[in-house]
Amino acid sequence: MQDALLQYFRCAGPSTAFRLAGPLSPDAGFFNFGQGVVGYARTSKGAGSSNPGKNLCDLLPEVRVQAREISLPFDPDEAVGNFRFERYLHVSPEPRGSLRRAVRSAYYMARPALPVFVRKHLQKAHLNGWRKLAFPAWPVDSTVDALLEKQLALALAAVGGEGIPFIWFWPEGASACAVMTHDVETQSGLDLTPLVLDLNAGFGIPASFQLVPEERYKVTDAYLASLRERGQEVNIQGLNHDGHLFHDKESFREKAARINHYAREYGAAGFRSPVLYRNQDWFEFLDFQYDSSVPNVGHLDPQRGGCCTVMPYFVGNMVELPVTMTQDYSLFHILNDYSLDLWTQQIERVMEKHGLINAIVHPDYLCGTREQELYRGLLHIFARLRDEQKVWIALPGEVNSWWRQRSQMKLVRRDGGWIIDGQGSERARLAFATLDQGRLVYSLIRADGDVAPLAMPSTQVATGERDFRGY
Image (cartoon, rainbow, N blue to C red; front, side, top):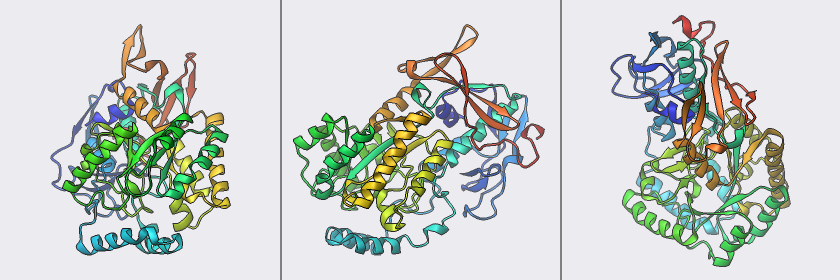
């Protein structure tokens, strides 16, 4: 019941034990776990709601503490997994109906010949009603992060607020992390790569380029070399961008074998599925170090859902780097928004949780002056975050390496204090979680030994005027 908590925080296990309050319901449902925190799992209080937006029962008052043992009405590990792997959706992750398959087949067959102004109207019709979706929360959903913060806060309250040490999320004590990624969809995008490289270089922002290996354009050795010579990363974007990658399991297995071949040929460690179509249960057939196909909240994507976290997590042996910012195409052509407002709002929400800012900008859609100026504005924001707020601007592969190293690090007691042990620990920083008037607080131990208080997460133990310690 605390595996997800220990992996997320990489903390020395709290001196409390979690147990279930009783037998769990056969079916999972939505519920509240304190103000502003949603869960989806089986519970000891019966099945929750099938509708995340209406009259959710609050299970926080059901928590009991006795002799440092915390009794919970649900399993937090189950709830976290249900969100990360999108099990809260009551539909298959890939539409199966013959009519919808036929419509999709016709659309992707005609797509290369459809101008953007036609495509965007078809897509707007498909996405009609997205603003009414109650869950995940728009424009950034941090349900998983809030659940785990709540669990840690409960453990702290159970021991009277005694601080719990953990390994800080990012190397060198960075306040958050940001990555820039470019999906190259067409020959036009390939041709605009030099422009994008120059724009990035002007702000000192590295990026990864996700390439379609078949049919769309020819990926030459010279093109790959031009990216690597400028410090960029090369990744694979599906197979041929036909919209059918996850049509059925057997065909996906066959296509994955070809995708894995291109990964070896290109020297690519990362994967992204075109249009963010996905089925995380099938990722086992992909031979990559990491993936970045899962949106944080997918309201504006053809496949809705979302992993509801702003932090990386493991999908089998792969590290998942969730997409936490709206894609440029959706911003321009679905929302008709050519401002930085939405991106800025999403960045601020991710920063509140010290998470991963993961942007997708297509070279294909940077063909106009207005789009290029907007992208310059985003690069300026990234550079300012790096220079003024100590955000780690990294390549996706660097984030993958760090998250793997951190997952193997351990906290060890030595000479009355704590040290971090494991490969890469020289870049890691010790942090402490404490409670301040029922609110979770982080403090970072800097390299010089000084303590640096950090912004508080928005998680409180108290519900209204009731404090957890009074339950």
